[in-house]
Length: 312
Image (cartoon, rainbow, N blue to C red; front, side, top):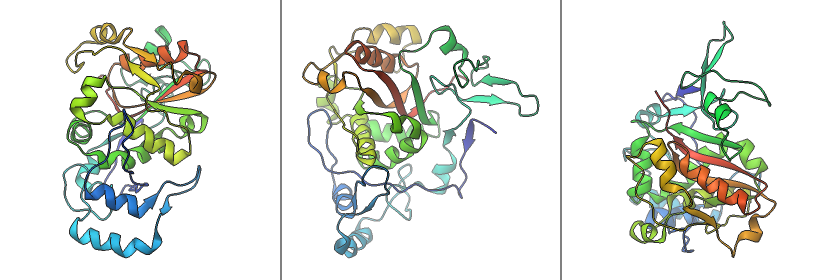
């Protein structure tokens, strides 16, 4: 077995429910005819059920729109069979994360089945104490969240998807990505009682026009029938971009930057929070958000991500 695997052209495709137009503060909205077509075509299912048609009589309209706006790959833009799919070339370039993983942070393990010894993706030994393996970093300094899981590795193969979604207005990808996340984090989804995104500072939200984490959180909550609170957490101060910061610099950068919205605190108290973000690098941001949620009375925090960085 392997914790890292690359899907080939024959790998299973995911075609989840598609996004709705939403203009709530902190969430942003989906724009364009693709979003309108997807809204007509699909409906979020009840908890535990598969997506189904929203207006069956309008299926011919959707098929007609496909002729005008044909489905395109979320990565490269090539024509594909269905909305929200990847072409074989882009799909095969993604490194998906799978078991075995650190029971806390989700760091994948690589191990020799014949020898039976197990090591984390960063080369450190794991421990099975407490049920499941934990990486050396989590044993040395347990994170404030209980579990973190991600769909894919953040690398050259996944970067175009993430950057297009985050900075390129590819908001129609929220629901397909959420379907991948729901599968990777099925245990986290089953235990969640409330869903919330990692927040943006209002100035960054104003310039970007949407919070990509909030779009993912909403799509996940709709799939599972969970309450979703886009403004549960607040970013109290603007923080510099963390793209080029070291691990320690990132921790200092976000220290004290997050707090629970006082108007939403009662929705969190005593409940298990599913915190949603698009990418985790060092984990400093989700750790800071988790501490703020626990301080406000959350029973526990799990983190679900689209991608995470791995140390080579």
